[in-house]
Every structure is written in C-alpha cells, then in structure tokens.
Image (tube, rainbow, N blue to C red):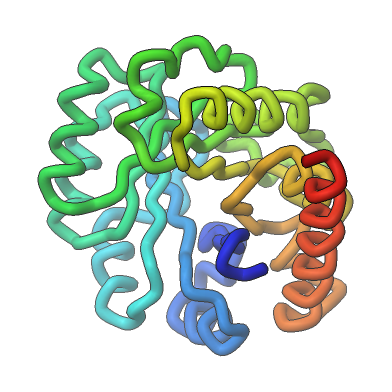
Length: 235
C-alpha cells in the first residue's frame, strides 16, 4: 500500500518553533517525504518558511523534500531550491509565463518536476505539458488559507482528481496525482479511490491535535486501504 500512496506531511502544520523535533517525530513515524510550501506572501497571503530555514532543514534530515512553490516569481525560488538540493519542485501554472523553461531547468538537475493547479483552473491547461512532468498537484482549497479552519474543500475536488486520473490513463502516462488542501480523515478514502497518489497531510489529518502523530498515521493508512478497495471495485 505504502508503495502506491505517499503520505507527505506538510511541515507548515508542524510545530514551527520546534522544527527539528517535529521532523524527527515525523521520521520516527516511518514517513519518508516532507511537503514544504515556499510562499512569497504575494501569490498567497501566508509565508511560513524562509529559504534559509529550508536550507537548515536539509542538513538535519534525509527525508525527501517535496517543495510546492506558491509565488509570482517562480524562477528565483526554483533556483534557490535546486541550490539546496530537493527531490521534487512543483510550481503553479497560473503564475508561469515560461513553463517549458522551468520544467527543463528543474529536470537538468535530475529533480522531479510538478505542476500545481488552483481549484478552479481547468485541466485543459495541461494538454501540452502533461507528458513532461512527474506530478500534477491539485489544490483543493485556495492557496495559503489553510489556517482558516472553516474553509472546506471545493465541492468538485473528487471529480477533478477522477478527471485528471482518466486524462493521465488516456495518454498512457504514469504521472502522479498529488492533492493538497483539507486532505482530511473524512476525504482521504474518496480522494484515493478517485486516483490520488500523494496526500499532503496537514492539520485535518496527520497533525490533528486530538491524537498522537502515530495514531493519526494509522487512521490515515486505514482510510487509504478503504480508498484502494473502492478503486479496485471500479476497475
């Protein structure tokens, strides 16, 4: 199961005053991927981690760094992340004039490349770039508002994942689908059943405060199993 579905803890939902302790706890739980949001404060209103903090994090852990850039100036942040040495860089199609240039820049460094789409951005924008990317990240809430506990996933979240999964299959590709935004205990099985491969786990799942991280991970894994069983029934 874990080979197929990746749980990627969102570091901005961890204890930001005790980052090293948080990362060690995530490692201890047996997770190998860390989702890191790089936010410029303009494209998205929050700004949780600076570049130097990510650089320090790289020194204390061997976890895979799955970086999601939310910025109006992608090239600057792409270059900074390449200098640090991360495993995957995802940037938003909505703020990119030179998409192929960014894809090639990332690939040149043997780093995986992802394209991110805001909730209302149609899948049709992927028509020419889909074969070039490793991952498509679907935002299921508007970027940067994760701290608004009342914001729900967009109503078409599962359908969009399903439509993207069908598009990838129709082109004979093995592109991964990453989902980000209110990926909660309630929604995980449905998202997995629809075709999600990478779950960005935040305050409504892995970091839910009423349970330990290890207990939350078990509940997530159970939800993943349910989703995979549902998916198997439809194949």
